[in-house]
Image 1 (cartoon, helix red, strand yellow):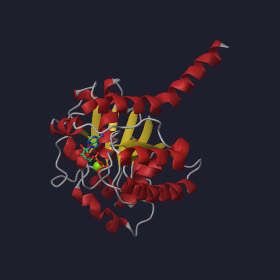
Image 2 (image 1 turned 45 degrees about the vertical axis):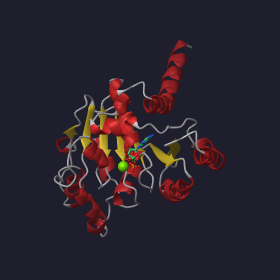
Image 3 (image 1 turned 90 degrees about the vertical axis):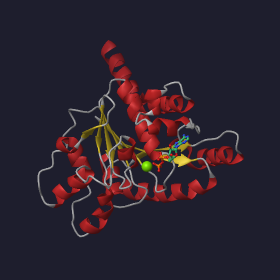
Image 4 (image 1 turned 30 degrees about the vertical axis):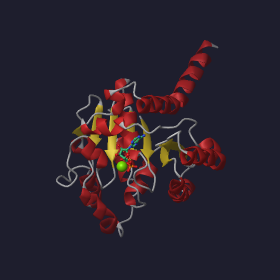
Length: 269
Ligand code: ADP
Ligand code: MG
């Protein structure tokens, strides 16, 4: 099981769209995927037609159980997404109160990491959609993941948000053995605009190998897909946006491919 988190301390940069798109592609590849919505706004939850205002039996309950010292299997908190192969831990607006509630309690940083372990035999991939602010939820996501994706909108103002996010990454990296692997994913790219081109150039210049070599283009079909509670990658695999996410997934999976090829090679010798 591999765990990816998607975070940026800025809203509207394509975090939820990235989570949904990668999950859709993985499910098409017959992988079992668990999506965790850790954003109290619950965009991912709403995407699959659950109501973050009405129900707090998902992520909120997970943290409450831990705070009360109760055992915390994860499976009974999960919901079907409506797409075969994808399950969901729903967010609720009540999760916005967790920071205040839990600030005095120690040991709340590994709630998600521990919970994921209880379902590790049932899923191939876990994708965590993060809130746009630093707090107990983001800290949990960063502690639980092996690879962090940071979607960055290709426009000038987005670079400020990125700096903030990267400060968070280096803070977390210091407390983790081997640091925190992270990749910047340029999103909402419009090759007709100077701002998109210049921002991309600046990202590559300033952050080098931490920037994925591709881009996610603007594609209005993402919004249409969200209306039908289906990932665009599932609904229209040939759409520009879908193809871009397919390349991103291929790149993300590459280390695994590479290591299995190395293993094969090793046995051949
Ligand atoms: P975040 O989770 O970072 O707040 P979202 O993924 O919810 O961002 O995206 C914000 C809005 O932008 C949504 O309406 C979404 O459909 C749209 N969007 C995201 N990525 C793209 C894209 N590549 N092209 C066009 N619209 C997009
Ligand atoms: Mg979101």
